[in-house]
Length: 242
Image 1 (cartoon, helix red, strand yellow):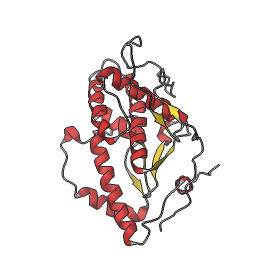
Image 2: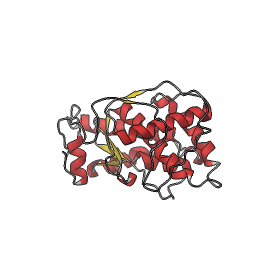
Image 3: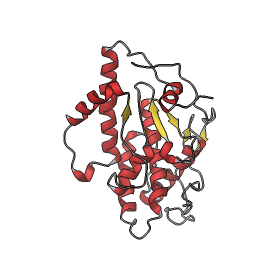
Image 4: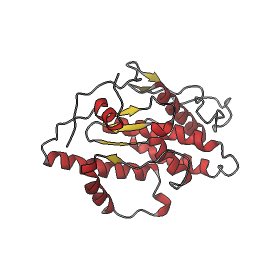
């Protein structure tokens, strides 16, 4: 049974814009406060970007991602899907340093995951659930279909090139009645080389397939105009909406 509600502004979102990038990444629960970016005296930064209705903690992490990629590759990120290939390239460079600097892993996964989640949110008109301090509880949910996932988990997968890590799980989550249909459709997608399986760009392609599949199912059932909101996702997690 498809659930729907009027769109609501999620708790913890700010009606004003968040200007990016910030000066430094926030500290996190694991106590990693060091920055993997090059020397902070390294001159100019890309022009600031305005994010609307984004939780402050997510906006700060996104700003750090913009900084890190700029200082590493000298290219700006503008939160469009095309820039995910640049972030994939940045991740490959960080991955090469993890054996000597393992403390970079959780921090980079957080900033990259926030950026990936915001790209998805902007592209698919989604909502953040990121008020909790523990990133294992963070989610991005979509409004046009009932689908949610943890973008920090996606970034952990990409950084470590495996799902065997200490980060959140990254799988796409949908209503029970849609699970089999989605699994079948994803199994029919062309095979992806192991070296590309965990790329952010590959994950976005899988998400595109999932959205298309769920939209077709909704249209066939006459629910093509349904929009999911904060209350729907709060109900899924057994949480209230302020």
